[in-house]
Image 1: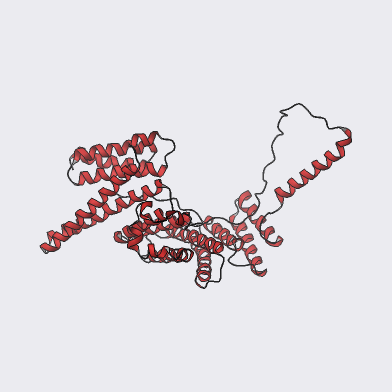
Image 2: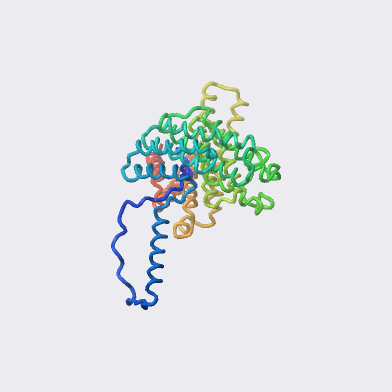
Length: 426
């Protein structure tokens, strides 16, 4: 059985507090001269000294002055907070400074949607996380999410660039919320995928505002899910930057949505989610390797769906169910298994070369290697399931070899487990 899907790395909520790096260490020993000594003529000495002093003064100013968008009173509190955090790892004291900085921002009536204001809030949430107070961190993130949602829905922010930055911040925060919830509870709420989908719909609405004609192309899930390659999209260049500046966060959130659906044992919704993700990846001009990896994951989801149907089919036959219902379920099971096979085969063909040639290449994307390895493994599992142990053994051995080459240890373990089943005749 396929027990895992490969995921994108979730970007953490990006720290936008532009404060200077504090100098904790000395500057080190001076370098030895690489060229013969040069003597300045006496008449130029005063000018050289003035230039040297100006350069030193400017360097010191640049090094120590807080180049950030904050007023002096806020910047001072931030520097103190960063000092406590980085120098002494005193997160409680650092947290108090950051909270005081936020209160000062409120007193000065700073824009609560500005990068500086929300950046301080995220810094406070990070301090709560370091103190293992994840629920408090989520309270901060929820406050940010609520303000962003209100601003986007009520159109209080007109700048397209600013709206894009707010969506980027929204998606970063929502991912952090669910990461923190994973640390607090074993199982996510059944409402979690719906809540995440709400924020994804918020992004989609914003995209349609940027390009109304795009709405005709992706009016519903069926249309976007049918996009497989760039050839499926007319005037592809027009949409190349449609997901900027939140492309990375958007796909991390979509990946999280699929994961939450699987944890809720909703394979149908997970499958739909991944289909839509692949379509958006094609539309968003994502790199071929990442698209191949998502397609390989889609093959795994199709297999899981067929496996679920097989369990239902077994129960129906055991209970002496209606023959027509059994036949329909059997046909659906076979169709999903065939679709999984096609996706795996298309991934391998889409790489354009054999797995050995791919490994030998230094320019290939890591996602391409992972996609091919996962597809070889998936095909091996399907061959074994269909009663063809010889072909299954060959594919699983290839998958194991390639997984070893690229350091894909989890798949090595799974391939070994399936190969042991073949040796034992299970």
